[in-house]
Image 1 (cartoon, rainbow, N blue to C red):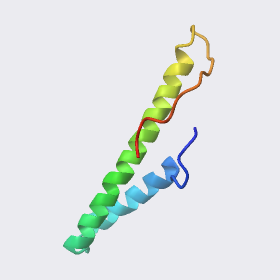
Image 2: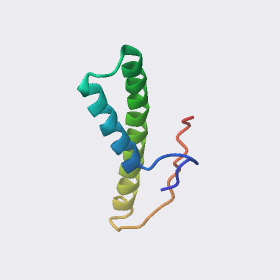
Image 3: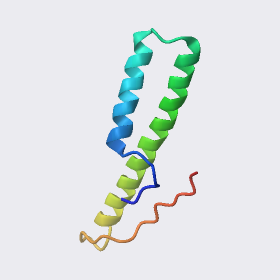
Length: 81
């Protein structure tokens, strides 16, 4: 699946998100650090959701092509920044 330059893979984003959650749950962050971590977590969550949505669309296209598994082009430019 084509991705933007410098975009992390789904797995990298998910791993980073899990680490952020652990840090937030640890309760050792200052309010400013917690807000920054939360903001980063929201971005990572959106990135992961976009990747999952693209994968889901590709699977749907593969399955819906005349009942045969034929790959068709998928425009991944969804107008996101």
